Image (cartoon, rainbow over all chains, first blue to last red; front, side, top):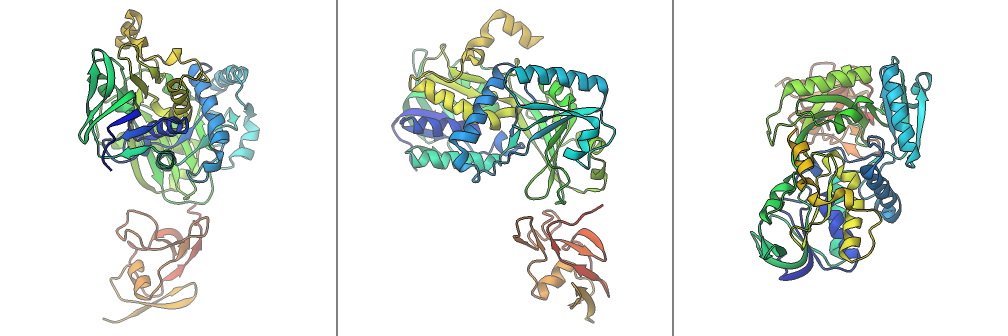
Amino acid sequence: MSLPRFVDVVVIGGGAVGAACAYFAARSGLSVAVVERGAVASGTSSACEGNILVSDKEAGPELALAQYSQILWRGDLAEFGHLWEFEAKGGLVVSARPGTQGNLARLAERQRAAGIAVEMVAADALPDLEPELNPNMAGGAYYSQDAQVQPMLAAAHLLRLARELGATVHTQTTVTGFLLRGDAVTGVVTSGGTVSAAAVVNAAGTWGGAVAQLAGVNVPVLPRKGYVMVTEPLPVKVRHKVYAAEYVDNVASSDARLQTSPVVEGTRGGTILIGSSRERVGFDKAVDPLVLAAMAGKAIGLFPFLAGAKALRSYFGFRPYCPDHLPVIGPDPRAPGLWHACGHEGAGIGLSVGTGALIAAALTGADPALDLAPFAPERFDTPAAQEAAHA
Amino acid sequence: MPELEMSLDGVPLPARPGQSVGAALAAAGVASWRTTRDGRPRGLFCGIGICFDCLITADGVPNQRACLTPVHEGMVLETGEGERDGN
């Protein structure tokens, strides 16, 4: 399909976040064109686990966005849940040591105060939730709101729904520059032609920083590599998303070195997904077997039966993270007309729909459901933020 | 080439030395020998050991890839509903 000459909104990126922005913008009555340089969901959206988690988030703006997204996944979008395999599987965070369990209880207390459903689980009650779990655990916390979708299906169906509302989707179309009037962005220049637009939304995920640079603004999104391992199909042995409490610390960490912590969950296909790793190695696509070995070892520590399971394959993705681990959402005052919806790190699938709804509300002049200030694109330009980014 | 005989769920199944279990099943017209949890049929898909769709229980050992498992005289094959317990 040829590009339209003029639309209300151009969305750059056909991953989960771009798809959600396109869907909610189209639903708000805006004309929308999505430009994606590869195929739908060809970036991080197809290299993740499809998490919709509240459990791994400290009370604060990201948790608020996760809660808002929960309302949309389970409410507004509930009728489509079967299309993207929405599974309300629940999350179980487990502690290997009593000290860790104490920290987990304090995190849970703060989350509960923010409205999260979380129950502490004593060590002797863990087998009721996960019979195959290593019996030497100190305890855990159960989060009934944690869920999962098949992320590629979510992106593809949100784009299809957007098209039914009049949006157009253009794959294999690379943005090479912006139409500018002074500092203001008035459209995009792509490999398939130019499109004028009242607003351009940068939903380019891990590549969002490079897109922002084309408009001359700094949005410091950086890649953080994470592997996932897949086992052969097995009977139902893991009922929830189960992970070690240390995962929360690793998510929040800015350490560049390799960090691994066990995350284990079953899929409808019978395979078991094993994570997780996080390391800052740029866009290095080399597969390091030592990382996979470390992940496998820790997963066996959590579920001893996995020692007898065969690994079918592994994959990795580049999570788009910002120095303060918050996404970038909203209009960019440095380049009027340019909006951002990127930098969601490992939470982009879960947070996609909340992000899309906030962007659509702001684009149409409605009051967004959440204050966008903590996600402001220009927040990194203060001297203090620049110092922190280089620390 | 002389034939050898295996069994699939107790029913005789011919094969030739050097064949894979998957090839013998396909040659006998058997396209599926496992179902997913929601009952959809599974058999050979990639045929080269990558996809794990063709899992079968061979001589009592579950989750063997039919495409990589060589046949032998008297081999006992069993179909499965869903995945078999590998432990």
